[in-house]
Image (cartoon, rainbow, N blue to C red):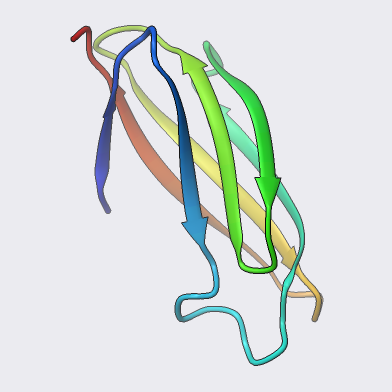
Length: 91
């Protein structure tokens, strides 16, 4: 798992490519929901394509580690979750 570093004042996008080794031929993302823990980092927006889910986040507290979790449902009714770890550091 990769750890990303983010400044508290930065507004950044993070993506998960579900097509890489997960989606089957012709299968696409039907829904994508992001959750952030702890909740003091703000989700500004979220979007998805047929195979990639993206979240834009802002804020966070310096020294805190956050989990950005993406829960998806596919066109074939399969569900799964993957997380991104972000550490906030004052730059």
